[in-house]
Amino acid sequence: MSVAGSQTRLPADGLANLGGRVVHVASRPGSGPPIVLLGGCGVPSYDWDLVADLLPDLALVLLDRPGLLGSPWPGELPQLASEVRTLESLLESIRTASVGRASSANEIVGRTIVVAHSMAGFHAEALVRQRPDLVMGLVLADGSVELRPSPPRPRRRWLRFARLVRRAMVVPALRLPSSFVQRLLVAAQSHRRVTAPVSSLTRQTFRDPDTIASVLAEQAVYGEQAWDLAELRMDHDWPKVPTIVLTAAEKGGARWIAEQAELAEMLNARQIVVADSRHLIMIDRPDVVAQAVRGLRELGDDHD
Image (cartoon, rainbow, N blue to C red; front, side):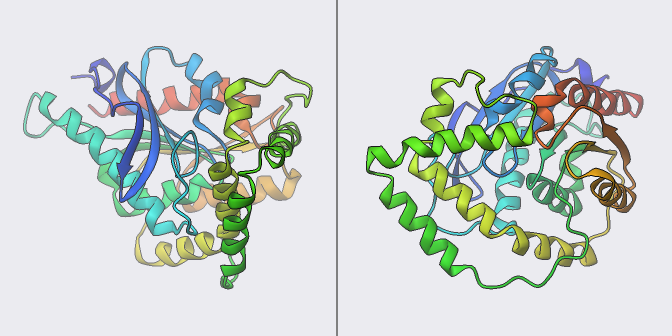
C-alpha cells in the first residue's frame, strides 16, 4: 500500500491542549503522510500559506506555539523539553487517528514529515532523536544552528520583562508599534517589501499582548534550548530518518552555509543551498520547501 494514497484524519482546528500547554492547531485534509509545519520564533502558521498552496493534495497540520493565534502565553520561559512534549503529543494524536486504517499488523501508519523553520529546528531535532517512530522525514528550513553553544545564564529578568510588556499592552496605543516592528522584521528577513499589504489577521496577531510576550520569552531562551539540545545529542544518536537541510543563501554568507553544512553532516542529511532567499525561506522560496517535502514522500513510497 502506498502511504501517499491513504487519506488522513487530522486534529481539529482551533485551540488544543497538547503536552500540558494550550496551543493553536490548524489542519487541512489530504493524502498522507501528514506534513507538520512548524514556524520559528514569532512566525505564525499562516506564514506557511505559500507552501501550502503548492501542496494542495497533501494533508497538512500547522502548529502555533503558546501565545500565537489566540492561544495564551503561559507566563513562563519555554523549555526545550516542554516544546518536545507538545510536538510529541501532536504527532501522537495524528498517529492515533491513523492507526485504525492499517491493513496489516506490520504496517507503519501515522508517521509524519516534519518541516521546521529556524528555532523550531531545535524542537524537531530533539523530537526525532527521542521518538523516531513518529517521523518518516524531516526538513529543516534554514534551521537554527548552534553546534558548540555556551552554557546558559539565568534569564529571569527576561521573564519579568515579558510579563511587564504583556501587562503594558492592555493600553491600546502601545499595541500599534508592535505590528509595524513586525513588518520591518519580515522585510529584513525576506524579500517582502515593508510596504507590502498586511492582512488584518497579521495586525491583530502582533498587537496581541500574549504574542509579543511569547516572542520575547522564546528569544530569551534561545541559548538555553541550544545548550539542552547539545546535551541531548550526547545521549540520543541520530536515527535513520531521511533529512533535508535547506539553507538560505542570503542569510549569513559563506559562514552560515558552512555551519549549516556541518549540521547536515551531523544529521546525515542532504543540504540544499537555496538561492534568492533570506531567513524566511517559506516566504521567499516556497517552491523549494514544497519540492523537499515531495522528495521525502517519494522516499517513503519507495520503502512501502
